[in-house]
Image (cartoon, rainbow, N blue to C red; front, top):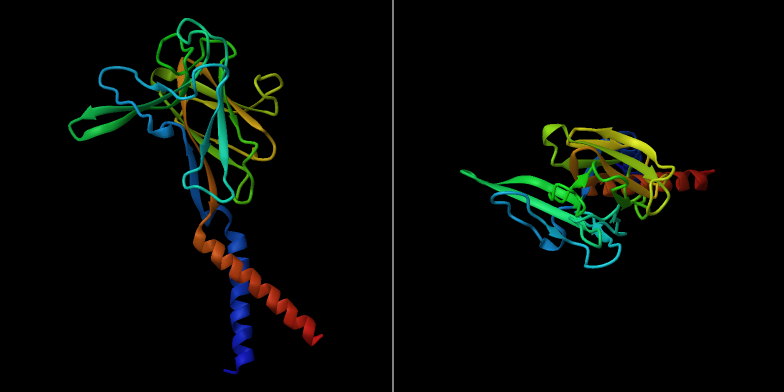
Length: 249
């Protein structure tokens, strides 16, 4: 095969690869997550009841920023902030409360209640409570971008859902309150999905609508590394083929 024919064949194959990848969408993707029960390694082991730790400081309205796992470049971070009234459980200041419960079994420690709650839970369990009006965890997603995320959608998981506990997630562009917030998802399952939220909403407000719940993780998708390399090769091939055609013309 002559060299220029070989080059054409390579470029053509690369172009077909690019077109093929463009049509695969989310199927060619890896999942990244923001995990809210292992911040700074401050984990608690439950041996007889609820346990956890305050993770956001000692005074004032506190926020905690989490990076994605695995880390992305540019960095994709979300920030959690507690909002709501204080009570005898929370003291003079409301805090984020992290739980990473593990229960000992005959086969070792097993995950229990895991996620982020609030210190104003009247039950003392440190969760987001439906019994405290205007109490919510606000998630700042304004710094998320696509790319490097390959979708405008997010998934999430909740913790502590025995006995019919229920949650709701609202979208808003207002910091610190839920005025004008739009209901995005609600239910009583351990997982949920949010569609077209990146670039539309700056914040997600997570509330309990029955009993009390925890926010455990948020997830998103990114192109898998192999796909990125192949896609880049394909796009390069498309460009070179177009250049050769222009020269011939």
